[in-house]
Every structure is written in C-alpha cells, then in structure tokens.
Length: 513
Image (cartoon, rainbow, N blue to C red; front, side, top):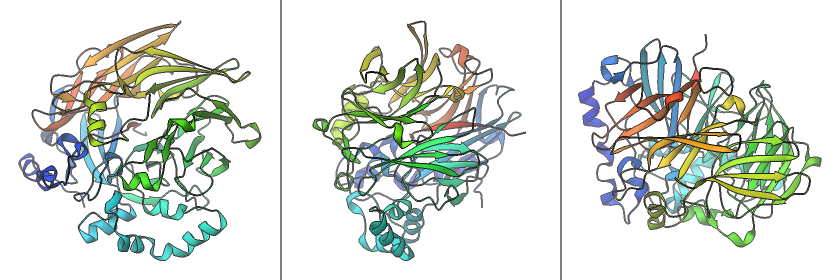
C-alpha cells in the first residue's frame, strides 16, 4: 500500500534511522556518509503541493524518469561497499503537467530475509552462515545439480541479487539489474516487484546491468560473468518476444569484472581488463582486485552469437566501467569510453576518497580504433581537460555512427559533499571535439545525465534530465534542460522534500498512448 505523507511528516521521518550511522561504524566508510547514506522510507507524492516546482514542465515531456541505486535497509555489517546495497528505484512520472513521485525497494530474496530478521545479514564479511542456509532453502538440489552438470552455482547468484545498478525498459516491463544476477521484473507504474525474468527458458545466470537494445530490430544483447565456475563469460541474445535465442560461452584467461560492453551493427565487443573478480575480494568489501600482469584483451564475435566468429585481440592496459557507444568504419570498430589507468573504487576507503574528491586516477573520454584486419588497437584521448563518468547517447543510435554524447563531470571537492558538479554535452564530428559544460550551483551535485530525444535519431532536439542533490537544503530535485542549450540553466526543476541518495543509472520511458 502506498505511503502518502505531507511535507512535514516526510521531514521528520526520512533520515532518522541513519543519522548516526557513520558514528557507529567501526572504521570510516565514505559510502555511508552524506548523500551516499541510505534513506529509510518508501514514499508516494501525488499532489503538486508536495513538490517544489521551479519553471514550467515542457509540454512535450510525457513519460517516467527512473533512477536506481544502492540503499541498504539496515545498518551494514562488515566491509560495506557502495556496490552492495539493496536496490531502491526512484521514479518521476510526468504527464500533462501532473507529477507522481515514488520510491520502492526491489524485493529480492535477501531483502525479504533481512526484513524479517530486522538486520543486515548478507553483506561482505558480515554475511551470516545460517541466513545463507535459509536463503538456499529448497534450492539446494538445483544448486548441487548446477555444480555437477555445469560447474557453476548460478542458482545462488539469483538468490543474492541486489538489483541496484540500472533499470531498463524491455517490452512492457521494467528490468532492475545488477551484474551478479538475473534481471528482476518491476511493474513500471507501481514499482512493485514481480519476480525474476527467465526469458522463456528458466534462465538463471549472471546478467549485465548494461544490455544493449537494437532500436531497429528490438533484439536485446547482453552477457554475464562469473567469479567462480564455468563458463567465466557468456554472451546472450534475446529476441523481441523476450525469448533467449543464443548463449555463447567465451573462454577468457581469468575471472574478470566485466561491467559493460558495446555492440555495433554486426558485432558484439567484450573488453576484458585485469580487475580480477573473486569471492575473497567480496569478503574484503570489494568485487575485484587490480592485477595488471594478467593483461587486457578484447573479444569480438558476430552479434548473433555465432561462436565460430570469435576473435581475441590484445588491448591497452587500463579500465573502463562505461562505454558511450561503438560503430563500424569499414574494417575498423570505433569504441568511445571513459577510461582509467586502473580500476577505480576497488581500493581502501582513503583511496576511494582520493579518486572521487582529489582527482586521483581520473577517468577521461577516450577513443579506441580496433582494426579487424590486423588486430591492432589505437588509443586516442579525446578530452583530458575534465574528468567524466556515465557517458550516454541517444539510445536509438546504439551501435551506429553518432556525433553527440553527454556525461557527468567530476567536481573536485575538499569537503567530500558530492562527486558530480555538472554534466558535459560533447559534439564529435568531422574530427573535431567540442564540449559545453553545465556547472551546477555550489553545493549541488548531480549524476548520470539522461537524454530524452524529441527529434529524429541524431537530432540535438530533446531534453537532458539530471537528478540533483542540494547539500545545503538536504533535498533533491529533477533538473530538466533543453539539450540544445545544455550549458544554460534548467527549464524546469521538480523538487522533492527529501534527499535522494547518490545512485548509478537512470532511464526515460516514454508514456505509451
């Protein structure tokens, strides 16, 4: 049942449980401080009086903006990392000037058990053995069968899902994703959890948080990696009816944390960097450890998953969490990414602070050109003037030649109040690179910009949506920008009376007629 509260009630209840969270932690943890810290209420706002509205909502903006992120429901035990919190989805539904906001936890198996126990049981070194036995329960036979027949414990990856990284509209569903586990299906309107997606064949395997949709065919392309068992990496093809039609195992030399990948018109490209994933690393509060001696590679195969087409190439050392896009130029595959010298956010608390607030190990916009004829890879830094993350494009051009991208820009902050001080709009055309950077007001911090197109594919017409935290007022707002004037002030800001913790990825789902 929806919880509808007036503004005064929200202010009293929203942050109470975690006000002293860091004070009780055994050691400093930046992911439990400030706006990284969770909130403890599920809310529904339906009355315009519940919002602070600045400017006018564009008349041609009809749909829902979703943004997800980690939000542990109880004080974490052990070595908590931002990537391990329970998934919480926030949604702003906009239709003809009316607004509905709601946030909901994704009801995963671990969430249900912890809710019953009223404490954290499954995070990092604080994982509870008896709780894990309860979690496995009647799945013990399927778990043993998987170990014997397939050499993996994929059933367990389903059970430990946090569904906290991204949300993707697919068909009439909304998929909540985390790379360790199968997708969780949410109701796009209510955000109610409806269960795991099985793609028509009892699918139980890790599934990337960054699948790629072919806008012309409706096919969905994805992969999964494992931290133990076989295969280490697997590539998936799902047809427009939601059926998985191809699963291609890929033999990679080590267990790698593979967060994202790219597709072109004809190929799937899976870069493998030496961020070595393991259960031991997870117990330390990290997913992977940086081991550069293991080498970096890129695997290319036909987009339809034909294993006979698989090729491996050496790749420049470094790491990319996210790719903007990729496309073909003759026999060359062009790949644009935010690239680091080594994997970020996998070190100590102090090292993570240095990366986010002091500019250590910067992520910069970088282009790779992979020659399919001779296997050579060329690396070119497109812009080293600013640090970026979360590159996005007009999704209708995924895998096609494009010339515009948007990305969050880091704002180095001695106070550590926030990470992203704005966003940049890039134009990449005719060999020239031009960027217009939007700077948020002092003390305001955003995240991934989401592009909402209103023109034809490739047109600059549309809007940029950015969910912003106001550290001075301790609340958040959805900022709406004219994409053709991205360096200007928002045309509209939709404020809520509480803060929305920093999260990862968002998406716009147009209203269906």
